[in-house]
Length: 344
Image (cartoon, rainbow, N blue to C red):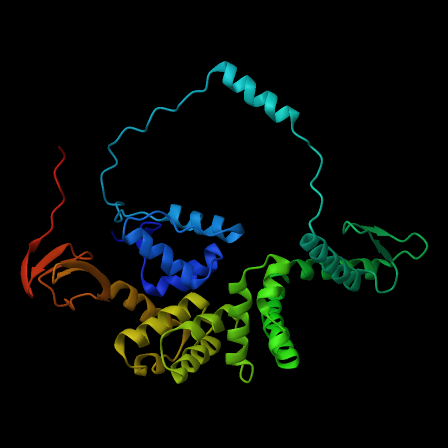
């Protein structure tokens, strides 16, 4: 049973993105996909990561893209709760505690760090007072000039734009800190203890550490995600440097990088990527590759399987179904078109 996510068949190239999106380790992504293929239940894991694993499994489907089907079905009638049931739910809501939840230890650390950054951006001259809740008021004993007021507002606007960059810097910092601690403490230091103490995902720490070690001597002017995608791509080390260089030079995002890695892996040659000479030529190559991608279902030696391929490159098999063009083949010979089933 072929797993789909958002009406798109899942391939090995999607595993890293799914791991990031659902915040679960790569081995668990593979475990969930394999369980779905075999018609088994969702794998069971404890804690917060177990909840995310179940959410990922629930998001999978076995349906092909049905966007071209006629939308002739009537929408299901809404289910109406009885007046007594509605009253019961309202009564339950009204009984709930409406006070704000207390900050967790993790939230408290983030709040403190954010407030310290705000203080550095706004109150270096003592013109403003920052509360523990992160609110700002004018220090009436030392009010700001109109020029300083404009400058502070501009600084706060810049502060709002830092979120993504701060997260990116945090990944590199985490990797470098853990690496330094491992070197200093040796076997006495274990990242599993850090993960247990902070309830953080072990995969997050392991990933940042691995990516940091791979690129600490040569980091490109790109996001941490760019480097992570290149690091885990199944291509040669020099080819990883090539795609990072092209993305840096021609302003390509991490998804573009992933596709360039797929092109190199599929073609078993990096010359096409080496020939990129502009942002537009990179996008044209990526679009052409996506348009040429195809999924084939293969029956061979009593088993069904599937593989990614390029349009027109029919793989070997007793029976092959070309999902992109809706065609079927038997032992390499064209059998016929696969037509849409008539309504019963």
